Amino acid sequence: MAQFTVPCSVYRGGTSRGLFFHQKDLPQDPNLQRKVFLAGIDAYNVSQVNGLGSGTSHTSKVVVISPPSVEGADVDYTFYQIGIGEEIVDDKGTCGNLMAAVGAFAVDEGLVDLADHEQEMVEVSVFNTNIGKMIKLQVPVIDGKAKVSGDYLMPGVYPSGAKFIVDILEPGGGKTGKTLPLGAASSLFIGNKKVDVSFVDVVNPFVYLSSRSLGIKGIEPNHELSMNQQLLKELEEIRSHSAVEAGMEKTVVEAKLAPAVPKLAIVSEPQDYVTSDGKKISKEEVDIVAKMVSMGRFHRTFAGSGLYNLAAAVLLPGTLPNQLAQNMDNRKNQVVRIGHPEGIAEVRASLTTDGHDVAFVGLERTARRIMKGDLYIPR
Image (cartoon, rainbow, N blue to C red; front, side):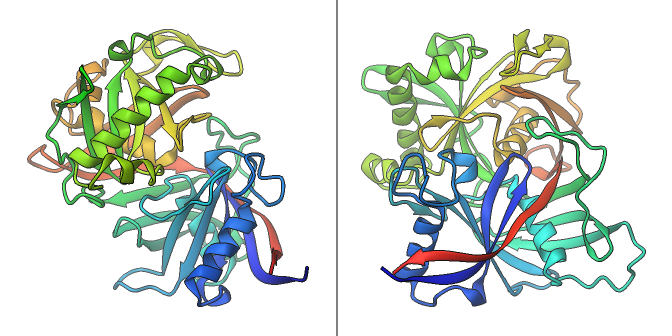
């Protein structure tokens, strides 16, 4: 059977990787466009061997770049989470890691004015259509392209690279209209069990619950927790019921058919633990310890959108992350140290003057273009 081609680039941003397209290069027919995404990643097979995914939620992603629709933006972009063994194309959330790659793409593709070729950093303003938020990026440049090499080493990616600075302005309420649509903390009843959660809508909406409420420490290896099918089932019930309570979906069935958001994270107080590669982390090095579940699986590290969200949640009074975090001094503007399965992420976050909402969240990432060419799609 013959195939057709679509111009495509593959970028890594932070600990995520995705297919990048210009909107103008994609078919106008939404169904055909969906087929490009599904086949390009290979959503049909769990291994994604027939496409450019690799069977993980952080590499099963698509980004589409289009001309700016709002004043002050250099480009718009729309993010899609693609299914793994399922025909899912979900645009309800966004990806915090690939934001850095959007800046690299905009520079590499000549979508940003680089009149001063001697500058080492260029500011790129992008508008994310998924959450309706403006993102300010400081992109390192060299010879008119996004710089790749550098000495910034971020957890989960080796070797080091050039530092990209990402700031999301007024990040709350992108999907529900409120940063805390259910208040700082609320109770759910799943069957006969009462579960305390915090639903925080910052960048991507997240559901938080404490490790103690699940009868675990929160520092167990991912592979161990992944074998606990009863735990995974319980987490999905909590996630889907929370989506209904927050008004994101009308029914639990609909929530289960939209697995990308809200995402879910398990949080615990600072404690000594060992990363997936054997590095020892002491409780004094972190302010909170967390694991997240995305698309029904434990995330290898912690999604960029989740890092933004969790840092904000730690600062917001009364949330479960706020209650569990330690080593904090109640400042409204600070760096939050998040312990995750592959190390420590330091996230900048600031509350508004009244302390009731989030002014911005920020993170440092690395990014690079991996390839550019024609993507072949079966007819």
